[in-house]
Image 1 (cartoon, rainbow, N blue to C red):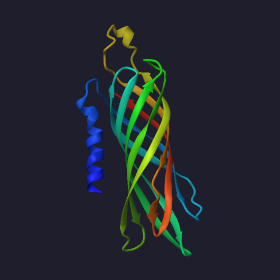
Image 2: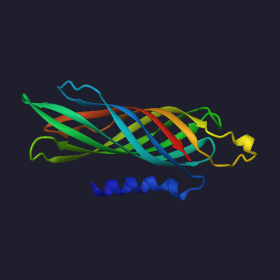
Image 3: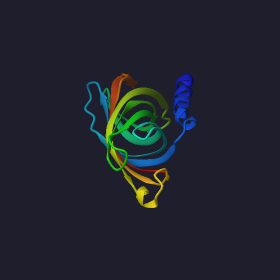
Image 4: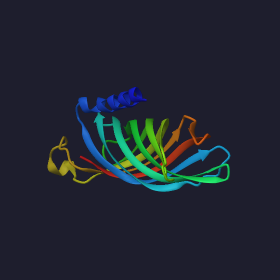
Length: 194
């Protein structure tokens, strides 16, 4: 597990070493579903926040991010309700393609590694650490907060507003209290790139 986490963090450092970097702060709403086999589980709406870095050419770019979210999950185990708090640390690595250079929609596709800390809310509860790989797809739009052409400098770096929607689906069968489940999430994210 330690090697997997270390390798993911090293992958996130690749954009840092490249040129034309942008930092970003993002946050928004996440609708998460934990699909337990044989158990009905509703989607949960939670808050998500994080930071990222973006690098690459004008229209083809790479994103590396770290996102944090949490949700409460109730699991029926042999007639007994077990309550958990899922604390999620998600590390997406995405390819982003902008259809036009400025103020136009873009698409993202890639993968993510997620560490889920499932904290039991019972007395003397224990924490289970789970790891999931996911596929991520999405669309978004960037809106420049300053007209670069009016400034007379096309290379001027300034803040850009980000609005993005993503869908993430887990690939692994995870196990909690001897019940198998898969995860999926729908993100609505807002942020600033600078």
